[in-house]
Length: 329
Image (cartoon, rainbow, N blue to C red; front, side, top):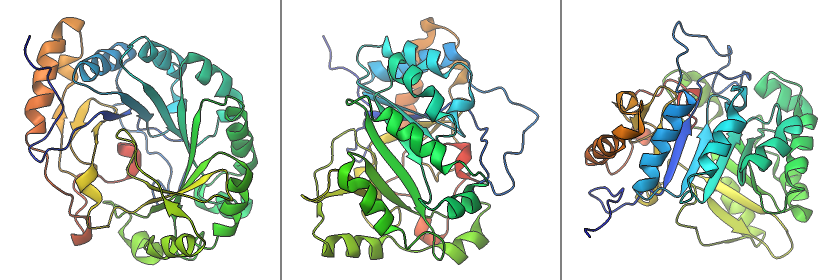
């Protein structure tokens, strides 16, 4: 038998991790992403469930081990539980993860976990209820925290939170984070604000490097821990006095792209080689039948030859990403 096909680019990077957007719609109005809310396009024809499963079967055969469902806000889809259940039937997929704003988590947690979810990231941009409402447009912080603690009842679920670091808004919340992780096995992550096509004024006003936050936690004795091969882009830090961890995602760091291990699919079936790249390859014509999986794999491997070594965010280039709700960050 020949060597199995592998998702590997010309720079030697391997991609066992797929981020799959299942909708562009979102019910939040986060200042840095959709300050005016989701503007419904004429065409809401996002990937159907059978297309999603055919896609994941192809990626699984190419060595993908981790699937992260994103949006928009993926819990808006009424068939999310069924999608997770169908992915669980693909035995080589080891991790089924979800990134969510947590709006419905308090009531959905048990069904999602029973379906097969085993990792979750929840966006919480502030642990101060007033600030949270200002940033997101919703007074839902306590409900979202309730949802996280509901998930935590299932001891095998990996729980992480994401907080976009915003100068003058939430860059003073490290003490709140430390109180949460002291006795809870949760990884709370700070994400450096990224420039996109339509947030440039906001970026100029509120961007702050994560280096200062990193300096604070290192001075406190937090130490960097090793990164799993299917882990996301965060550097994680642990401390013997804290049950949880702190994560730092620094997309402007010079070596950020060297460890890239993930590919992205848009809610309309476009393969995105980089969050901040131009365009994408339309895979949807190859998702209509299981009989097309071999051709689908061929198209994916062919496209991977064109993945660039790095983005050019530091130079102000954002590619075709107008806002992060398009492709789930």
